[in-house]
Length: 436
Image (tube, rainbow, N blue to C red; front, side, top):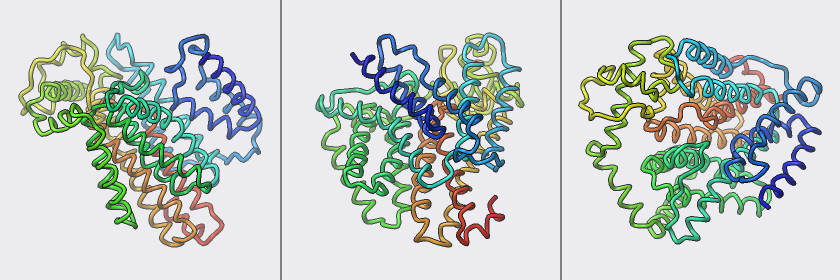
């Protein structure tokens, strides 16, 4: 029955995609984030939704050149993305043999970058940008609402493990916390009251979904998000009030097991799982020291052969005593994951993309200050996107999440905001040379 229902509405989506290039692009992004196959068990489970909408989008862009499509213009964000992808291809080529995930992960990165590079070409106005943000919120928010409602219905007994696409409960928590500021923005800027209430409800339900993961990284992400919103908010009293309400709800509804789990953060250095992460960091850095330009290839640290070769090497963390760990564990850090997979050059490019995103946020803030009333939306959206990236940096520091598409999506959204501001016919256009 579920597969029949999905077949029905995806058939309608297919018709809409064939009628509009931008609609096809929206559905491409939505399909990638919602991962419908994780919720299907029948004949629709093997349908490649992402590939179908991607092919329709690319074909339509070729056949309908005048349908609101901006001509390609290189920008700073695009250049960093392309450089990272080219280097990733070289890393995959020069990788250690028998890396099961090597080419699959590179393929995922390539598809993510392709989607992002097309974003400035298609999201050429505020209304299109808003539609893209809504689609992203709906794609990821679907998982948060599903797990949050299960948590509430079970009286706090439900434990969310996430879906295979996102990884374990810690990865899932990070992704959910990253979408919270986007939901908050949509609650503020949706014109219809019922829609605003819908996004507010989704926000609180998703917070409960984060709690249901029992993830300490999720808690750190929530703390980082709260600090960012208080720091950046123009209405600090209102922001503090919302956070206070959330804290009260969490303390009242969260089970004792969650509280015990969060308190254990204080004894991280005595936690065997944490020290196992440090061991993985040491091995990942040792791989990079031996292969400083191209690293060991994607997920080299998870290869038993590569692990055996470097398990006794000290790498960059020789000053830390670590326990013996079974071979082939995950890198458990976006920084060490990229370092081991793509070497010091890859890590530089990865950090450069993130730094560039925050620089773009600063440029948007400067542009908005010149005409604050007309472009307040751009400033508020960029702040929320910056909050999502901060959560990624904080929570991702203990997770193998360097190649998730959502952070790249967020980075390019910031670039799109800047490009929309720069091409506007108002006096802002006169200063486009400063930030182009």
